[in-house]
Length: 244
Image (cartoon, rainbow, N blue to C red):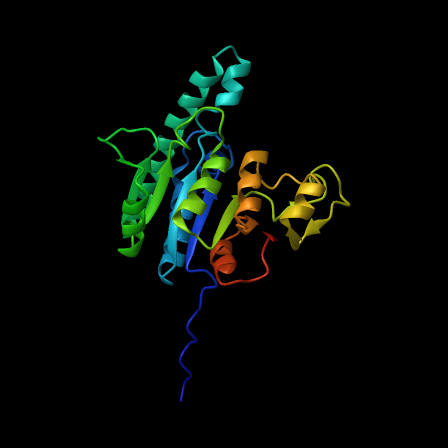
């Protein structure tokens, strides 16, 4: 008699996935690459099938980055608002890809734009999760001078997620840039305090401080390895785990 395949048991009940805008741009890192967005949606769909509730915060750097705009003469606050609008474009692209794979998805924006997205309402977002929908948070915090990393830390705590999964193009957190130094050391596990003392760039300062204060764990991993998101959700030793 053949054995039945064992049921996969996720480690986390509810996750926040932080995606950079550049990730939606594929290898070029700019614009929107349909193949890259499709692959993202496939990975998210895979963990949803395990019953994991998923919220996503997406950046806008593939379209416009406020800080870079200010260096080119655009007033900083205006540039940041432009960047927030770029995240809405990315959120809609990801929503389209998810729904084409049969995953019901809602976009909530911190900047009201009722024709394309719901306003951010925490209780409504929680209800969407309870109904099996993926929720994508767009437009950052709705305020200039705050990054989408900060938005991710804020929404993670508001939504009561178990962990922030920061998707990157590297396989974790290193003591120095692995692209420049062949002897760079990757951390498998590190505490918030150690990361702060060693000045490791896990997230920007305000985002990391919020995670530290609220004891929010973070996993930094390479999202571009096939099925890596699933491995992280199952609790496999992938990337770098940052916890209290």
